[in-house]
Image 1: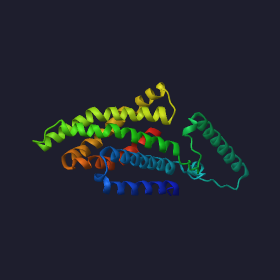
Image 2: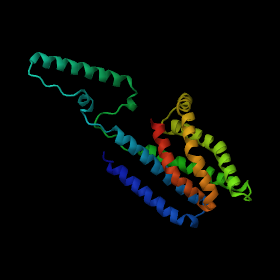
Image 3: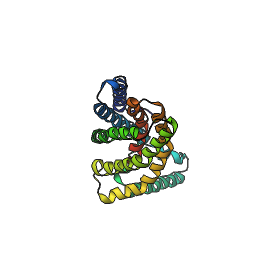
Image 4: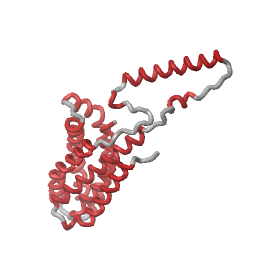
Length: 244
């Protein structure tokens, strides 16, 4: 299934800017580099997430009817029975759709428009997060000695994953629910109850190993770009999961 041209163009633009930023990262001030990286990262990640939703939402208009098979018959009475069955099936389908959340119902063959408001708000979130991430990396890199690289890297990973990850994930769901979706306290509680624990579990399947490599092998000035490269896919997953 084809990716919409607008989505593909935005993905290419963000990717090019991120690649160019990687080459010039060490020449920029640390905070400025973190801000630009996060803005591009969250912009690219949300675009990927929106693209996944768009591709999944596009359906052939007759998909549901095609699943039933097509019946041809020469008997007028049989034709009448088939028409009655199809009419009943269509009514049942419409009733089921009517009970669903209208925002979650996708019209067959319809491709949802690209949400620039959501894209902008995710970029704002990345911008705000950079003011926390950069000092956090500085703290984690300086509270442990370097006598044993393996031990110090493990300690940094544990500190990062037990202290920062749970809070940042909670902040992500709160921000997206309140700012992007216009939800209230009750909506936040429902979102956290439904998705927080399972998402945190998936986080622990991805980030400990990635952060161990980051702390053990990557130079300090390139740690944020490294985590951001992995973060593109992780954040795209978060954006998609938040929209489910």
